Length: 288
View 1 (cartoon, rainbow, N blue to C red):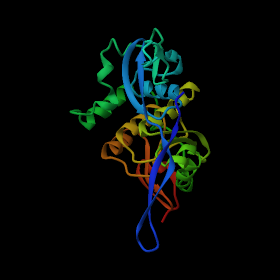
View 2 (view 1 turned 90 degrees about the vertical axis):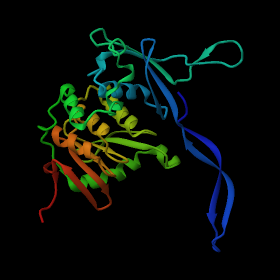
View 3 (view 1 turned 45 degrees about the vertical axis):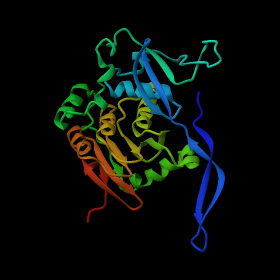
View 4 (view 1 turned 90 degrees about the horizontal axis):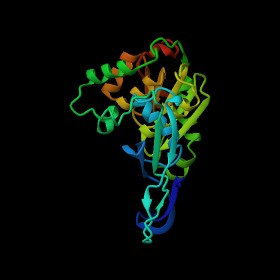
């Protein structure tokens, strides 16, 4: 497996007491970003830029969000394979841990044969309106998220960003990673994953849950760093998550999707305040 971080020399510039810039060279810890190619059989399906680690979880989450699989049993095997040729003139391939080959179960429709190698749902928004995107979600959704009766204390939601940060070991060293964490309604962490990509972090969390046969994720909260996009909302919806919380803002299509799907969206969850955008009845607050 590739490294999650690397060390690089950097020039640190600070202002002294007189306001003059002073520079000094020092080593810095940098988060790794590398491509991961996902193959169905020997045919390339997609390439994503990610932080190495939990790649098998990621592929389960990604394939689920794209409607290719519904459970862990749909993936027979997943293995790293040789992905680069050594430059010593021997022509020998080496394992870079940046190529994964997946064999799907016989009952799973082959996305390569279906021509989906270049038309993934999460990257095909160009020319597609929001209403059509939501309708497509309804076709693939398996869980009654709107019927989830979970209730979460507002104070519990407000504590989740700090709890997420506490579990981000790599972020503490690099400051360059997004995170997604699955929590109970009482705020207890279930699993946390980090990645340079917000979508990848969520896919790793959902992929972990798929491998543990925990879907649908009723009664749970998904806390994410960054903003709330349509893609993150649809991943939560398809995994049966009733409450999605973020430290930043939602997009309009994320709101439309959550309202339609029955997902509670909380944004700007920071410090002593938060905004409830959809289905606020799940979050318990004092009446004013």
